[in-house]
Length: 174
Image (cartoon, rainbow, N blue to C red):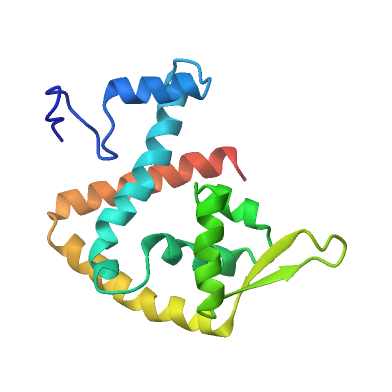
């Protein structure tokens, strides 16, 4: 992407080289490839998913962030609100607002822990499981439709890139 203001190139996440460097400096990260990889992945992956699935959420009263919450809580039930907000790279206040909405809609349930009633955990309700399944099929179909527009070479390259990222992460986090 071209940055209209300064003529520089932007990456998919919309950040210029200067913005990457400023963010890395603010985070206290050293100047190296590991820093750049960390920043690129944390910005790029949600941006790519949002772009690929934006048509699903345009016609639905269900946001992308809400869509990401249900599968995470289903996979890892009973964790704290702070845990989930960190995993989804969301601020705690923003996450809490989304959870309030999802609890009110009957998709999630808050539970106080017996040992410390101040600690709140989350679980997906049956209605939440049904909603997640309802959205999963159109998501898969639409992603398949979008990828069918890509050349076979580009699809293969994407698959190989994902496999490489997974292999590297598994290598260090078994």
